[in-house]
Length: 344
Ligand code: NDP
Image 1 (spheres, protein in one colour):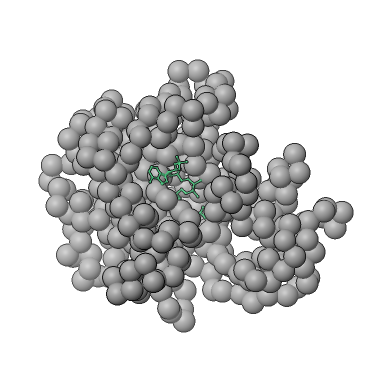
Image 2 (cartoon, helix red, strand yellow; image 1 turned 180 degrees about the vertical axis):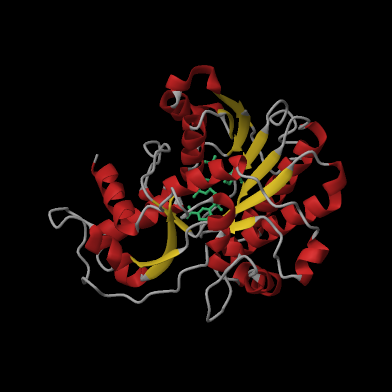
């Protein structure tokens, strides 16, 4: 089958594309401009006409994906801004929400052959203050409220989290509103911080500030004294596992959709939203994992405090991630592979 992947030049998306191609799928990728596709054409040239690109200049524009969805069997929507330097929350929320609803609307109208849509969500839409493990029942209401109340005075994290929460909510609402007319179902992958070797185009970035958020943080921790101590901790999944998760989401049998009303009564039980990975780490763990001979910062070995793991039992049960025959890439491997890649 052929999968449409939006935002193909992004850090996560290139891995999604690679894993799809390796699994035998064909891919049609969207990029904002033709020049952003050159690296990809080179990277995937061995796949011949199984990889093609289409330019979608503005994902928030009405009907942006109308042409792109024609003739594909499935859609992976990954394009969404991920950074912490928006002043106006709309810089994030408009492309996040309209991009999501827009691609679903295009699929509804012109995606006659589409069987499934998989959206790259985030634990940003799940995270909330809680003393136990977070799971798929949780929604990040606090960030939405913070942005509603404080607008551009909300924190940068709140603005990003709110954009992802509202976008995911809008996707499930779209399904509710149109379920009877759709020939496809929906799954949302909710990864925490995504780490691991980048294979997207980095070279055109004029400065580290132009790097995507994950790559910049990994680089900062390894090169800036005290960055590990300052950033302290997080929850992660390896970018290669997240790519696999998307492939599995296309191949797995998903439980039948139950409308939001019923879902809300059961606190999200039947929605096909999945936490992917979610293992706790400290950034000092990252430095401690690197070979002593590396030029990376050393930090203060063994320091830092931990968060809780997320529950990823649902992805284990339905997608087989972390179940028999699949092992998540451990943090030490992610750190070492990333360093090896950066050194190259
Ligand atoms: P990148 O910044 O590397 O990629 C983002 C992609 O989205 C790029 O293709 C980018 O295009 C596109 N995009 C961003 N804003 C717009 C816009 N306004 N209009 C059109 N296209 C846009 O980030 P990631 O790969 O890390 O993120 C991909 C997805 O994964 C996002 O949905 C993000 O929320 C999610 N995610 C990422 C996590 C992480 O730790 N990396 C964690 C959890 C979720 P362009 O290059 O042209 O700007």
